[in-house]
Image (cartoon, rainbow, N blue to C red; front, top):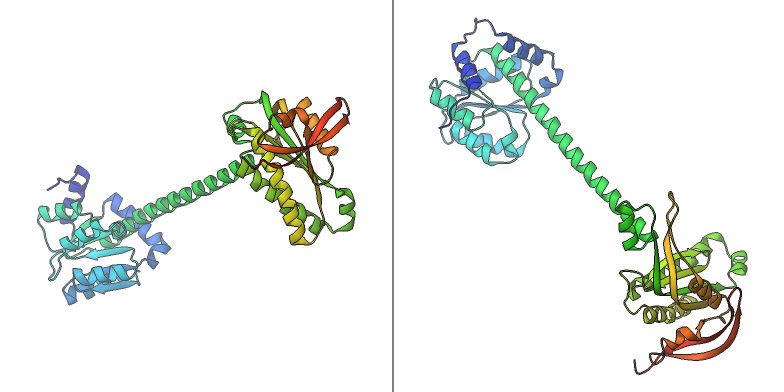
Length: 400
């Protein structure tokens, strides 16, 4: 059997020496003053458990005369456990010697229950043996008062028990609040992560989170795709803003799904222009084939959109492969972008493409020969570059 601490032992023997006319110690007087001044304690719900009807009624009367009106009764331990599982109590005053289930068994059952184990219990018993006191404290009782119970001392001990309980409950609620705040912070962090990944490639976002201030890379071989709606400026003047935004959102959302499917990176949209690159870290290994497949799929999507919305939109796509410089610009609003002759030529291919066609330099198409079919498109004068021999991507080769 566990030994009492020095504090518990001193308190217990002090209780044994108390009589109704004995003066209170300074600590007990302070506890009594706290109990008397705490208006909320008067609303406490207390369960009195005693097999003696007379003693139980006397305890109820005593508690009510001390200002605790919310009292329930149980004639034995088993009835007490039924009540405790039906409703909530702030405190229990428990006898030990009872039939059916004694106070020791009640304390043992409470200790096993993760919810009921938090209920403070003051044992009020005619047992005078120290072993009984030790056993009660070991089973989780808050305090032990010998019968006949000193009403003034009882009130002080109830006040102290309730204060400790509400302090623990306050701490528990604070822990719950902190846990909820942590969950909310985690949700916000995940939202921020998703937003960052909507703006930047995953590998670049990771580098920013690790604290890199300047991110700039040179890639020897990537594939760049520009897509642009034909006659978009005229379309803006013909339809309302909500319809326009809905249309672009629908179309670009389809393109976003294609980018994920083909493992290429959407860089940005500018108005009705959509920019994609393949060959960045974490993307498809055969980036040229992946971007070509996406370009063909984009043409299928624009055709499907036209059928569904009963409209007639045309799309021009330009492609090119080669080296680029890529990096993050800005501090408050991040933007990941590409620079270099490869990007400029892909843009020129798009602007010079016939409606609903995929245009690229012949040099790029040569890298796809055997896997895709092409139609020659002749020389195109490209500003800042000169004349470029070009072709149009038609479809995947049958023997793919």
